[in-house]
Image (cartoon, rainbow, N blue to C red; front, side):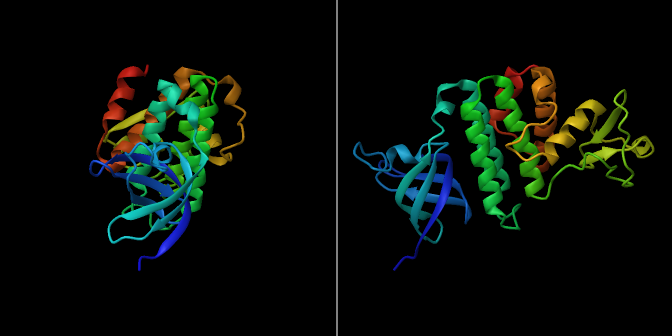
Length: 263
């Protein structure tokens, strides 16, 4: 007899298994990344149909399987419905799902800090759904980028040189070099020998990123009310490239974003 378990999970993506069934990829509060079969979900009278769409948080009962679990029951907790009515919200939410799907497998996520990651995804989707402006959407995604990397052990040290551990200058008139190959910032002495793929980040932006990293997701920083799309776009693309380099791959949604955003 198959064992059952209950958990809360957020749908990241789904795809057809056959004429009647689908496979749903979810991130759960207690089991991390789950792939499960939703049986009969394509039938008109299916009770699961609406609950297996992307960007829905459910309370689930599942039966364990060798390769795929099976969804037995699902009760919606939050549908994040406003995401589906806005192209920007939908696109950035898809980006979040791609990052989670890429990084939250056993290959990257060893510590099993599932609840922290689940709460972060939930808060990110909730913020995006309720955002009134594109700036608010992008700020939520930027917070997600910084914090998901921290939870997974890939967080950027914004304050110290990744080579010699020297504290970096905070002069707001200057910039600091970030090396994508070294996965960190370099001080003036260490950057002399750096010939790798790198970018200069203005210290004003770096100080803003430090503030975002240290501030709880649902709290405002002193910078929030003065942010503009130019700064947010640059920060997002900086973090996106860092994340891309860690996996050494891109998806179509990243390419769409690059062509539709002002760098």
